[in-house]
Every structure is written in structure tokens, then in C-alpha cells.
Image 1 (cartoon, helix red, strand yellow):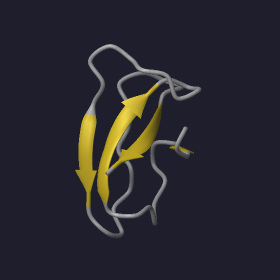
Image 2 (cartoon, helix red, strand yellow):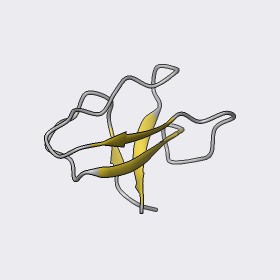
Image 3 (cartoon, rainbow, N blue to C red):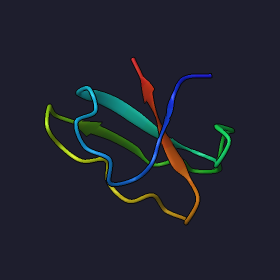
Image 4 (cartoon, helix red, strand yellow):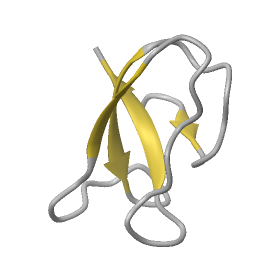
Amino acid sequence: MSDLHKPGEDNRPAGKYVEVGPRGGAVPHPRKVTIDRGDRLPPTQEKGRKWVRKG
């Protein structure tokens, strides 16, 4: 599994991120975001979820 990132982290590589469960598992209706260089990862829909980079 790819590295998991907490909401609010900055200095992550630019790209697309998908919301996943606390251990990286799929969640129903995951939030998908695209961040630019220097942006912070946004909040997730529920406490305890994380972000994983896709592509």
C-alpha cells in the first residue's frame, strides 16, 4: 500500500489524492482532490480517515 497522509499535511507532492480509511482501505463515496505544489491536504469527510496519492 502507498504511504498514507493525514489531513492538513503540507509539502506533499502535487497530484491527485483519494480519501481512504485509517489503514488504507476503501471507503464508500471517497473524496478525491487535486493539490498543487505547496498546498495542504484538505480535511476528510470523517475523523480518522487519511489520504493516499493516486497517479
